[in-house]
Image (cartoon, rainbow, N blue to C red; front, side):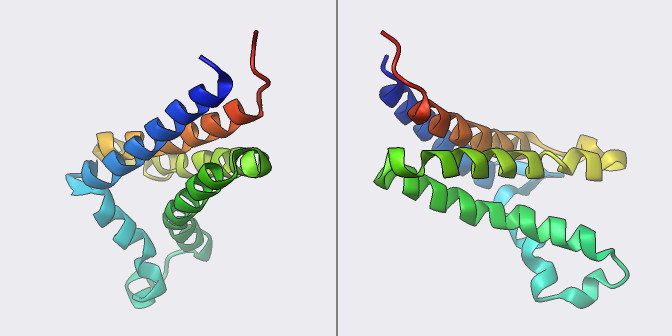
Length: 140
């Protein structure tokens, strides 16, 4: 399998995993899309988060915004693989690391994280892999 075909497979797997992360339970029976809405809620319902550290709220919102980043990176890779692969690799890897902070943040309640969360995080790692495979020279 050429690295370009492997990249397409990884990209497709990333998109499927991201979709599954949205529809499967992510946290305590809540679906991924519901977790997304909660993570953005400090933007319109800041009073409910009164007393919470700004850094925590920034992390929660940034984590939600990685979903927008995911869509943009997929579009970049589909449209012009080679030109944007390095950017996609670093951005997807950074989003993966950012989103891996949830189990640390939820330490006393991390057992409430469900399969949707882990599949969702994996989608970012698969996206980074797809970009890496575009950059990797084909083996002969």
